Length: 395
Image (cartoon, rainbow, N blue to C red):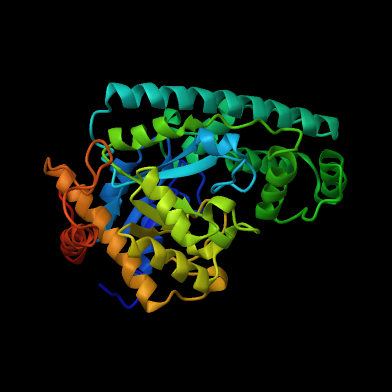
């Protein structure tokens, strides 16, 4: 199943998650302008924006795909000190859900797991905000920001209720950059930032660059405002995806880290490890990777009967293309584009089957249906391709 360009993107963060886009409608308009036919959100924790996303996507002739992203810990890998797809934290595994049903009533299990992680996230955001405020105060810049005010601003800009907001590090970095620029004259910013960082700043006038440096120097591990994330156990993260009706999928970092994380060092071994964990889908963010690396991992995954998809995240201020491209804007190979488009079609097919009350590509326990892996992928891809070609999905 080939397509002239990769007209699908299964991993974008949509406001009120931190995003390059102003709101959902902005994201959909950008995708439509590039001829994207299937577009997937991959938001953290809160899925209520997907109703608005669905409306905007349908109006634009785009098939909406629904997903979520979680942070988990695989305890045996943590104990062994193995880096998975987070190059700074052994055992830490980002995990995605593809083709979730955000419109279903959440199960008691989903409510329980979600409440734990959302509470921990709120506490972390409040603590980081307090530490950032103290850091800037020590640098002679008194800022009155708190996490409640930041969340309210995020909600207002995205046009959503404030309880839909899940504050992320980049939200805080943006809020403090904006407050700093308002409080400190341009000629004084370098000295204030140097006092906060403890080193000479690399940027003082570019808002996005200052946000990135605030995050890297103050919020990330080792910084004065660092607060460790509370991650779900792998079992709870995997279960939460299934409770929402999704396909557990592994977001692959590959040479997006240098050196490559040991868990991912061999594409073939990685595919085997994922099968042992009950993960039958994988995703790449090709903008992080050399084209030949994208080819190697995509081919290794597909050869063992895994669904493979690709996205762009758009979780920084940069307005990069919506079509997934390799590092430096290099095009993906025709063979890789075909496999990745096939994967997006599988997700669409899974959503359609689940909407009609059928098990989908994986069942409620994460098990693929009966039969040959390749045949099953082709069947779901055919269902999804029809939907995408008609530019519609069941309501």
